[in-house]
Image (cartoon, rainbow, N blue to C red):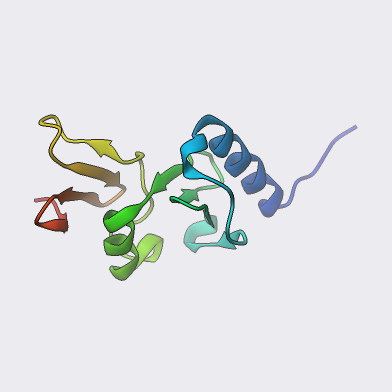
Length: 115
């Protein structure tokens, strides 16, 4: 017996697993949205999670999320996130890596595209 899955079901599984592994993102607040190149995105209380059909869901939140979305989100030149938000090695800032670059955040500076 074979099973077929629609794109939405595949994303539902990815997002459900992500939420279980990262409970700090809170409860789901939005509806699953299809995104460019067959990807998907889903809003939670404290982050938005982006995924591609081949796998690899990653969260973006706070000022980095606002900057990313204002610069086209997954439709823009950065494409999809390839990491969750991380602390900088110094611990003073944060960053997310994307297919097309990295967006950083520093206190007093805000979010910016890293060189």
